[in-house]
Image 1 (cartoon, rainbow, N blue to C red):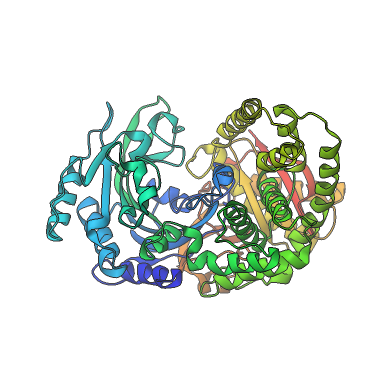
Image 2 (image 1 turned 90 degrees about the vertical axis):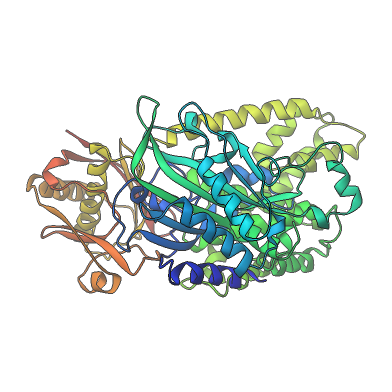
Length: 608
């Protein structure tokens, strides 16, 4: 079954009666006004405010296919199941139905719509902890579901209970890792068993002990996860039940496709097959050769993710999302050179990018962009790094003895993965101290994790007075820029924490100090006027006709929220916002800088 068919079946299944969900479009990969993560990494992320109780314009039952990216999985790509970019099929109940409806619907979709054999499905539930009891309700529901399919489902045989590390979901992990304000809850996962299709020598790894869904080894693959999002972390560290009990379902499209193909290699689904065929043609290397598979998988995944990012206008850089895009492109370049033993160029990358666009032809993801626009963004980066790569290889040749630290420095400076450095020195009869390399790498990871913890300050889960005020100030800033610059300014991105706002917008040149002063003064004038801020729900067409601003390239649902600052600005936005501008305090522009080709960036803050 092809991925487009699975995606359509899922949407149709949940929009049909009696489920009656409303379809919502995929949100951007780059979250708007949410610093809790650099990228949209789960289906629930754009709906955090709604999971916390804010009403959604389309009601309490929603369904979509959300494009996602997880930067923490970059180093894992190379096996048959890890990717950085993926699509998450999702359905939500915002305080509407709960476990007794969700779990049977989940099973019905997998077995009747996707035709998966129920005998090859295994489920897991939360075993409980001192704060939250064992999910015995889901266990009993699953027993009834399997009994209806003629299967006796016993706990420990087909139903497995695991601790929070395995069966609790929040964006930041188990309860003790959740920051204040973050929602989460116990989950129930469905695994597909590939064991019967494994060859004897592969099956032998399960011979010494009984395998179970979380035993590792590749026999079982998680394909569906129903999260019962009913808790929120409090400032005192305790979990508090939310006013509404939510269902947050996520099913990886790539993994569902692998299950329907009865093949655990997601890179052999149609979401990757054309891309990999193009890489084979470009490199002259066959995917069927086991030694080529890791490199080809990395190229396919990284260039797919980079293509999606570039399609949203993201450019390679040294900070935040731009740095991740740069890292993806560099790793793909290194792997391409590794396969071809020549310096890669755009003539090799261009057909791979085009194959990514073609793989998603049945979607709306690339409706507003073409391969030329994407190549214009990633081309200069690839050219620059190819030159750097050649220099790095020359430096490598000069080193007579390489240590693990030097290997890590090569990884950091030139993007050389350890396996490439190891292979180059193996030719000289040298071995790299892998323990030293891994020690340096762990230091780097710990630093990244420490930095990431700070990212969870503010965000959509943060409804503090300061953050809400900065959301409103962003609207004032955009309209002030339009008025002062006398230019059709369009928002290109924003990032808000409890301390400051960052606003990216279209403008072809640096703003003069005089212009910045006028923009700042106009915002403060509107704050002083204490204008009311109102919200109304209308269709997207009505919003546009009324003059409401939208974000270029964003996909909006049929009904949207429109925030109006009386007599000054009107925007389509999810909120939250202050009810009067007078609550904002004093607005101060901190810095203005370039943010890519013909785009500028402003940092600003509010003081009381």
